[in-house]
Image 1 (spheres, rainbow, N blue to C red):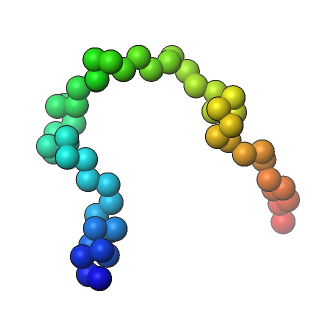
Image 2: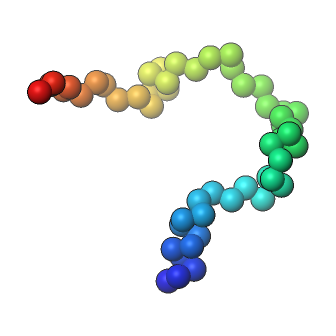
Length: 53
């Protein structure tokens, strides 16, 4: 439907965002690590065959 296409094209809509990135606040319960090795998390695939032509 037209509504579905419009929703898809507009992408993610965060209800907490009000048009100014300076209003973003770090969640008080968030304690992110200094670094993440995505390989350890199993979220990176091995390099594929990259034959150049």
